[in-house]
Image 1 (tube, rainbow, N blue to C red):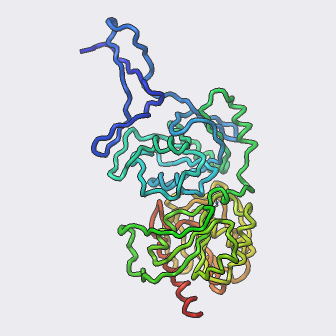
Image 2 (cartoon, rainbow, N blue to C red):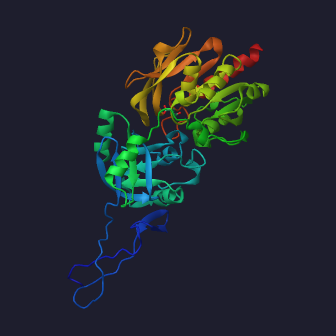
Length: 426
Ligand SMILES: NC(=O)CC[C@H](N)C(=O)O
């Protein structure tokens, strides 16, 4: 029995680069070489733990040392914090995070791994992931891959062992900040700071880079465990044209589960082509970035308003607000998380909702006749609109709840009702 200190020597470049699977439990493993003291020669004592090898430099001049996982390199983006306790994979694949680093306030991330069913789009569009603690094991019957391997394959940078509470407080006080994440020692802090101060996300069209390029028919519903509103589902097929500004798949799955046949079209698809298809309704989806940077999309929305029933979600809601003559503004640090209370002003109920947005519609700027249907109870901002005369409704948040609570699911039924009423009247 060795009594002297035993040294572990990490042989792989990353402490966590390989995994072993036993009954769906994946544990990070590393190869060890032991030295028991005087008898052994030539053993190199290398620290077995990973040391800080990355920096997050924020535009306010603060520098945060961290440990990297996933891809390496240098990446710039806007840092936002997300308060969801679960659902990191859906967050990673939400196209609305393009150009942003998502900092998870939940300290323990990675424990459920990732799986093919929880993807919300075809890839990860975000700039990177910032977390406090990367789980040392993955334990979930649905898991097929570790978070670390998943991010490496998708070339997305991640950091852990960083004080996410301190950064969140800073973002709450100063507002969203641009940051640069780097694993490259050759770059000085000053260079990274300069990068963060010369990069901007406001006024940039981000939806065109995440939208599909050609129209396609969507096939696929949510699984049986989602059918909590089965009495509402008629099976009657309404044809919906869905504008893809960065659409999340669960919006499409939920619409399909509510009996809709869906044609997804690119962000630049002309309104005239949409109207030629004679849809029962049009959906304007969620999407990344500044709604004021995409006037062509506002024009498309304007041309469709009043022609057919419309449902706008998040970016779609903001574009509707602008198309109606209203204004949008950038919020201090936005809403990102699965625990935002919203009041439905029509019936007084409170829904706990999933949200992800940095911009909001200014209700004061909207013309007469537009009804604010929902408000965010954390800050009183506009969370939903309706304009019954023009057959439209919209939500600033995510009723498809992936990830997040299902309280707002019935809104899909309201959209179906809007289409049914219109069909009957024509
Ligand atoms: N989820 C979304 O559609 C986001 C909307 C918009 N890009 C924002 O950040 O406010």
